[in-house]
Every structure is written in structure tokens, then in C-alpha cells.
Image 1: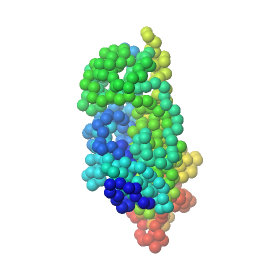
Image 2: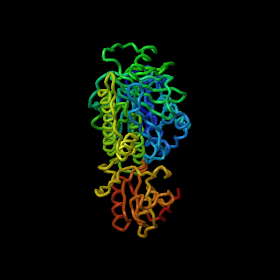
Image 3: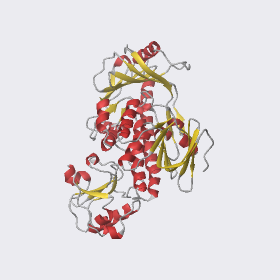
Image 4: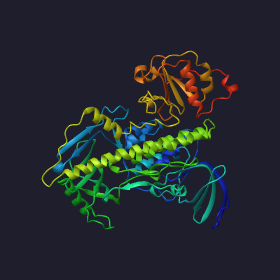
Length: 520
């Protein structure tokens, strides 16, 4: 490919993975790739990091992912916890509440912090490893070549041609990668116009509570931030179509009207208009180019899952790309990204839509002098709903990387104890040193670490197997295969399953002594 003309043309350069965009999706993808031994390059059109609040809530399932990635401490230190969710009616009367305790996760709370702080933590983590975002670089073309992707980059009038093995499009709603792939965000836009802001409030609120307040004219979502600040979402008045942002006094009046009480808004630091969407691309990848985060999907922020889906996109793609880059997996493994995250991201859109419709339904039920009455929910249904909101019920059943075991609903779901595993490999959790595995262990010792389940505090019954059973856990914590008893037939089936996407050791290397059971 011939470089375009500019003040100074640079010769073609190479990178295994180019990440376009330095939001949470791109930064966490880089972090996970580095953890798996692949050094990417990150380019960003902006000249410097932003300082906007934007997406704030990190869900419990993603906190486990951050824990596995070695990032949990700075997030917990910088963020504030949300352990309870309240729905209030006019006059701040409680209509319903939900508590995250008991949802079945190591972190039974949400962690809330401004998005700029999330990005700072990720950038600092990468900088500690010598990887930095390259700002002020405009991507002008991304074309598939015979053996990779040809990318044209422009900086200050100079053009660079980059030959990358793979490109990750994490550039948000206006993604150039998505445009070059011919993909479009398909779906709908919710009615209404909305305001998001970072404010201080004098409203008395119990600690660790997030709130949604509904009234006859609309709603306001009030979510705690560090340093006694609050993120608010509020619907605009129907006749408010101006472009000028509201003043602090105007926003205060709007919130007081929605809440039916004086919430004491002051110290407005950031405010923006936005619309809410329910949209996704038809496919998240085409072999060498992939879409992550807002470049691939947009959901109602009332569900609080958009930024979390971005983290999950990054986690799913990174370990697969790394295996291919290291020659340990077949390139076809990358096709599973679009399948798995396509299902999961649609689930996010559906859950966010349910939350959005529920809140708007409450608004419709509010009258000038009345509020909706919500009967107590069935405890089992409430728990399922909280697990859905917390993103703990994600399933990859139907993916080519999940063994087809129709009678086993757990295959394809997250293993609750997965955060206790170490390293970046697959893990085979066993409860007995079953004979007959020597050849299997030798063939897969480079890719699968055997772990004694009880060393994880996991009993066979809790894992859904017998004392002779086994569970295969992928690097991202999802169950790929489960055998109630790891007999010869099950070992053969597991061998076939792994060989469908991983590369076994060559026979001469497999003849060496098998690996010992890993200790956690």
C-alpha cells in the first residue's frame, strides 16, 4: 500500500493489534492483551484525555473481571459502593427497594466512579507496563489486506501506513472502524431528550444507595459518586428543544419539579444533553476487524450496563486474540467473539430496555396527587432480576467454544468460584486424580491447568459433578465443558472439544511428562 502524501510520509510499520479509541473498551482490551502476553498499539483522535463523568457504575460481574485482571484495588479505592437501589415516588416516598447482598458474587455491590477516573486508572496501569496512548492520530482508512489489515494514520499532516494483524474498533458511537467495516447501529431511539450531569446535592440520602425518583412529569436517577457528588439523569421538558446547556439554577428547578421536593442541587461541574438508544451492529467482527463497546452497541443508561458490556467485550476478545497470536489456537476461534458477545450484548439491550420501560411505566402511573403502588416482588424473581442487572446471568450457550451438552444448563455460564483461579490458561477442575488422563494431560499441558476443586473451596456437588467429575473453565471464567464423571468417554469428548479451537502439543513434545495438578 502506498502512503498518502503529506508533509512527511513515514514508511509502513507493523503491529500485531491496533486499538482505535482510548475509552474503557480500548484501554481494558489493551490491559487484557498485555496480561496475556500481547503488546498492542492504541491510537486516539482526541488530543488529550477527557474529564467527563459519563458512564459511572461498574457492575458486580465486571468487578470480578477487574479482580482477575489485577485492577480491582485502584477501582475500589477510587470508587464508592452502591449496595441498595431505591425507587421513590412524588415527595420522595419509597415505592420499592432492592439489596445486592446475596446475589452470588464475590463483589455484591456496584462500584461507582466517573468515567474519566476509570480511564485514568487503566491508562496508569498500562503506563506502568510501558504502554501509552498515542493522542492526536486520525485513522483515515482501515482496509483488509491479503495477510492482515492496512491502516492509514494521519498526524499533523503526516501519513503513516500501518500493517496490523488485527484492528479493534473502540472509538465509540462515531467509530471509524465500524464505518470502514460497512456496519451500522441498527435499532431504535427512545422518545424524549435527556440531561446528564455531575452535581452536589443537599438531599439526605442513606449511605450506599442509588435512587430513581419518579413523578407525573418524568424521572430523575440519582447515583452516588466519590467526594459526596452525584451523577444525575433527568428527562427534559417536552418543549425544551434549545441547544444551550441549562444553568445550575435551571437544572435545580427541573430536579425539584421531578422529585417533588427540594434536592438542594449546587456545584454543577459537568452537564450534557443526550438521547437514549437501543442499537447494535449486526456483527461484531469480520475476521480481522472487531468492534467493542459503544462502537458495537448502545443501551439505555437507566440499565447501567453500557460501560460494563464494553469491559466484557474486551475480556472476551483479548484471550482469544492472544491464543491466536501465540500460535496456541486456530484463527477460527475469533469467530466466536461475534457469536458470544453478540448474544450477550443483545441481552444487555433487553435488560436495559426492561429497566427503561419499567421506569417510564411508573411515570405514566403517577398522577398530580397520586403515586403508583408496587406490590412486594417474589423473592426468587427479585434475585433473578438483580443477577440480570448485575450481569451475572450471561450465558454463551450456543457458541462453538461451548461443548453441546443439552441436558446441562450450567455449561456456557460463569463459574461462581472462577475468581479463585490463577493465571491466563484454561483450567480443568477435578476432584479426584482420575486414572487414564496421562495422554490427555501430556497433549494439553501447555493450555490447560488441572486444579483440585477442593483447593478452591469447591465441593463436587456445588460444581454439579461427582467425586470423579470435572469442569473445564475458560480463561474468562465461563464453563466450556462439564463431565459428571471423567471416564474414558468423557476424556475423549473433552479432547475433541479442545481440539476444535486450540492447538495441541506436537506428539514429540506431548511424550514428555504431563504437568502436575496446579495449586491455587
